Image (tube, rainbow, N blue to C red; front, side, top):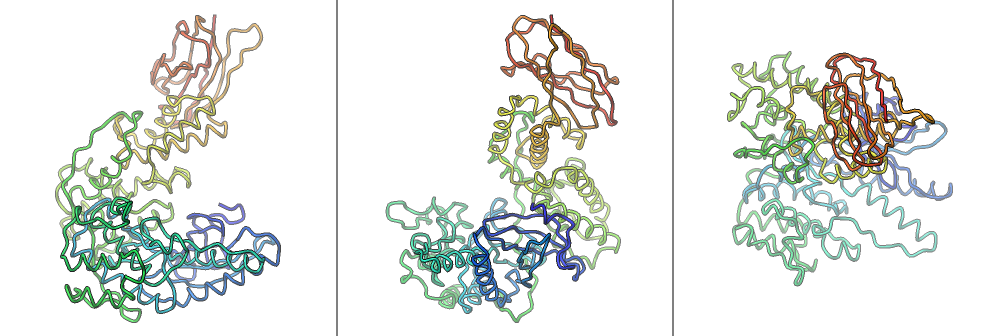
Length: 602
């Protein structure tokens, strides 16, 4: 996050920064509280292009304001609303922001990881999305980036929302294009969209038409139906879509999708209305599609639960393939019913006692402020809830008074975990739910650059993890939500090691064969000591610390373990190789303590 814009900063006496959501070439995006709307969450997008010269900067801001005005006119209940554009000066530096509604819910990529979509669900989804496209097309706006990632099932009512309009990206592209023209350069085509979802004319030529969005929408529907990405459905030789071997649809519906996906834009439906007419001829919509002047009706497309599969545990130091994580998130997300979703997202608060309503609202607010992903958090709490109360597996908790005690227990687990997750860094916590085996490999590479072993890293990560979650098994599986927490902690440990706060190189004074080091450890902390020693030397390690307060490990340069996670405070032996040896001391205590480590060679 920019040093000038940080959590807690209030802009314009109106918007309190919560955290950074992301950044790009034209600025950063922040989650903020609107203090004029009872701290309602919103999104601030900063416009700060990397351009040279005051004239160029001023011109780019003018273009930004002009294009943002068009997007500001779009007012549809299934589009995040652009609220306002404002300037702010911080430490004599000018900033330009526009404010947008914050939408909470599941994107359809996440839903796809948890369920299969039926033909009826996809057709109903089309009836809900197409009127949005019809509306924006009437303003001359093309979305350009429709995909499962940019459609969210809104938490409050289950309706699909179109997000990430390409609005800011389109503004950026137009600014760059016009500045290039004014500078006497040939502007490059504006290519926005995702490969496979965007049609050829958009990706290759940078040209878009209203039915370019129809192409991307049909591609998205087939991905939901088949659980296959476009690259798996398109014949690379003919460029035809071969989706029929993966799903069976009403032939008429299949023809509609094929026409939306025609390679030449002139062969597609020309407008949204043409698609709606064709769809209505084979299956009238279940309800009147929403238009901007109608109230939003409450409906839900939440996925149905499916049978859980047994997960295979392995030691936390033995990473699994990343695909297991996707599978097991789905398993635990729906294990024992849909309590996490029904209770946490779609419950009727009017049926709840006032204290329960306040308790759950506090949980929602705390999770939002911590930046913890919604669906990841539900899966994490469900995992622990069903571990603690296995008798509740296989049933759905309701809003009835008979289930109030179980709802309270679920909320208690949620509150406990939020307090523990708050101890992670913002950077590591925000990524929960998205860690992969590649992230762990990257951390190992960072350790190699520090000339530290992955075993030492795992020792320090385990110390922190089991201090925060002492009830967890020593065989935590990286494929489960709790394994994501372990990876986040490991990321924090590596950051501390890179800062030099958790390791120390031991140098023996001339002709000295003994070195004594003193330090202090807090709960969950550890420290790595590195000493260069020679083959056949005899090493003695003595650790003075309160009884039962530490675990001691010793590793060779070749990652051989001489002592691992031992409560013993002494070790002696002849060294098998020359090189850097690592002595790791970690805390097992619930209180801070001082210790003294002595290394002696002969």
